[in-house]
Length: 102
Image 1 (cartoon, rainbow, N blue to C red):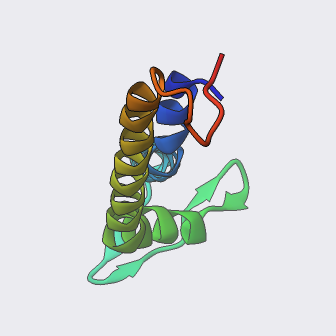
Image 2 (cartoon, rainbow, N blue to C red):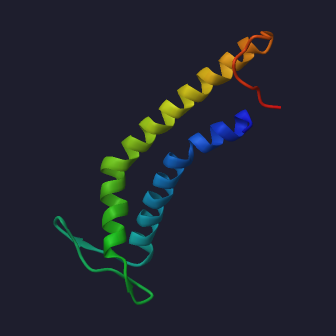
């Protein structure tokens, strides 16, 4: 796998979390959903109840999954960058123990 592809793949967890969160925020406003105190009232989009999706997207993704996805992405970026830099050092070394990308 080429290095650019590895860096892009490392962004997938954060991208998925952000897309679900932003979609939930959009759906909340677009379909006229409301809440009362701490309770999200039933919300329907084209006859389907989307209250569960909004609860997950607006609460759990912000509270739990956004920080987790950020840590995973940063960790993957660091690991990929270290391997990338090591491959530059091994490029001139004929005794390198791993195969380089073409």
